[in-house]
Image (cartoon, rainbow, N blue to C red; front, side, top):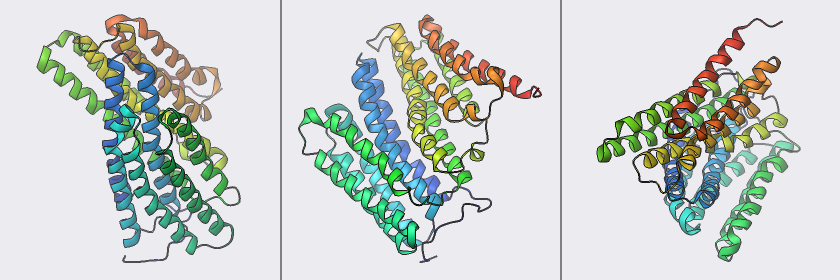
Length: 382
């Protein structure tokens, strides 16, 4: 439709699913995730894990938070008319500008292009919240206006960050991260926006598929490049096979429980939504780790075998633990089911010291975790 009033959608709406525009929005994040992963690979392969992980966290937070801002707003107020679509396309343009600035932010601590991308996104999103406020009254209107004001204040702070001394930028970045995370908490104190539980869970699942898909794509390119240059098939097959098992198991484990049944209010939804920063970041980092393992196998990475193995096992273990903490533990019965993922995460970490077959062993552990989980779930409750 050309124009319809923007009003809140029902939390009880049946058959609510992601729209083609939301899927298109998600797809554009692939570029930014790939940029962040590529910089992480370079840092890890050159033996700079500390700087690499810190830089990766900073740029990935920007990716994740931009997606979060859009996703939760859309779940509550998506009216799919022409102004809404144009505003969303403007946000997509901002995402692409942000992606273009990832390498500068990562390597040179230069956030100019990234902040410009965020400014483009925030102009459109602020207009969306003001439009939502115009269609609301009372506490709902106050919440929408608080969101709009919070976006303006935070974005002004990001612009001010560009003029801060270089030595302060990373510390001030953490302050601004805290400010950003507080905006939804403050805005929703008096009124919970009408996000749709099933829709939100589906949107998070789709983004998880994107980061896991990026892992498969990055790993495939790395293996192909190594084969083209070195033909080290005997060294690369265990890494490729183990990496594939890890990604398959990660997908299976993430989608094993009906998470929409747990999200009944902001008390559950906000910690769950925020915790996914580590789920998404670790899922994408698995692909970067596999690339590092491939580069080490063909002699291109300047790190030890243990460091190359850890590039895969550490993000895999984080992913397993976060999925258990955010998802699985709410649906498991008894200590055996509750301990499956934590024990699996420890076993994956132990594979770090398994030499050249570490990735393969980690993949086998992940596959065994799925098998054990299915077996325990099939047992009748006592």
